[in-house]
Length: 172
Length: 342
Image 1: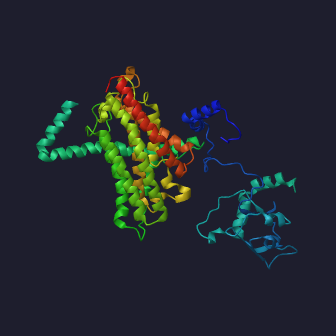
Image 2: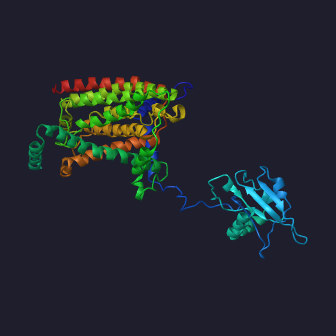
C-alpha cells in the first residue's frame, strides 16, 4: 500500500488478514483454473489454417494471359525496384514482332524480403506475390525460383490470385 | 495372498538358499520402482497438458492418441542424443552429479506406505529417514554446478544449495507437530493416528507451509531460481545433455511425487478414505488420488505464478515460515499438554 496520509486501523487489519489468507494468490489460481476449461485457441496447423488476407505476400508467380501468352514484357522495372536485388532478368534476344519477352527470370527467395515492390512496379501485372508460403528448400540453390517454376506457380495459384487481385482492385 | 507369499518364499529358499533374501528385496524394489518411474514419465506429459490447458492451448497431441506416447518419444530422443562433456569439466564428478540427484529421489520411496501392508521398509524412524534422504539431493546439484566449470551452472548451484538448505529447515519443523500428534516416527503409525481426523484440520497453516516449502525444496516454479531461464540460462544443468540431463529431470519429477506422497501421508491421512463410508474402495486408490491432487497443485502453481525474486525467497523462508512453524510447534505442545495427552 502507498502510505499517503493516515491509513485506518481497520483497513490495515483487513490487508493483514487478506495477505495472511493468501487471498490474492488464490484469486490468481482461480483465474488459471477457469481458463483450463475454456475452449482452446490452438490452430492445428497442417490440418487447420488461419485465414489469409487477399493482400498476403507469399511466393512469387509469373502470370499468363488467358490465351496462354506470358504477361511479362521484360521491362525490368521489377529488377530495378527490388530493394534486395533478388531479381535477375535477361531479355530474349529472339523476341518476335514488337513484343519483348524474357529469356531468364530468376527470383532468389533467399534474398527476397517479400516487400511486394515488384508487383507494384509491374505495368502488366505479370509478377504477383501469391498466397503460397510453403516452399521450403534444403539448399540455397533450391531457394532460387527460375522462370519455369514461377510460370508453373502462376498456373497453380491462378484462381486464387485472380480472386485476390479482383478483391483488391477497387483500392488501387 | 498370504499363502501365495509363503509358497513363493518356500520356493525361493529351496532353490536360492541364503541368496533368497537379497533376490526377494531386489524383486520388491523393482515392483516398487517401476510404477514410480512410470508415474515420473507420465507426470511430464501431465505437466505439459495441464499447463497447456491453463494457457488456452491443447498441449502435445501428435505422438499417439492424446499424446500418450509423448514421454516415450522424449525418452528415445534423450537416449539417442550425444552426451557432451565440457573440455574443462571434472569428468568423474560431472557424471556422479546426475546419479547423486536421481538415486536419493528413488531410495526415499522405501518408507512410503501405499496402504496398511504395502511398504518396502517399515522402519521406526521413517520421518528421520525421509528428512535425511531428501537433504542428500542438494549434493548432486552442487556437484553438478561445480563440475560443469561454467559460471551459470555454478551460480545456479549456489542458489539451489542456499534455497534447499533454508527450506529444509521449515519443512522439517512443519513435520514436528505431526510427529507430536501421532507420537511416532513410523509412517504407517502416523497414518493410523489420523483415523478420526486428518492432520490437515488442526494443522492447516502448517500444511500450507509444508507445501510451499516443498515446492521451493524441489526447485519448482515459482521458486525455480536455480534454473531461472532468463538469468541463468538453465542453471546447474546448463552443460548437461542427453541422459545425464534426463537423470536430473527424472530426479526432479520423482522428488515431486515423493514430497506429494509424504504430504498426503503426513497431513491428508495417507490411504484412509475421507469418510469411513467410502472404506470399500482400496486404500491404495485413495493414496494415489491424494498424491495426484497434490501433484496437480504443483502444476497449477507453475502455470499461475511468476518467479520469485531471490531475496524475497530467502525472506519468506527464514522470516515468515520458520517463525510460524516454530510457533505452531509450541502451540501444539501446549494444546497436547492442556488436553492431557502428553
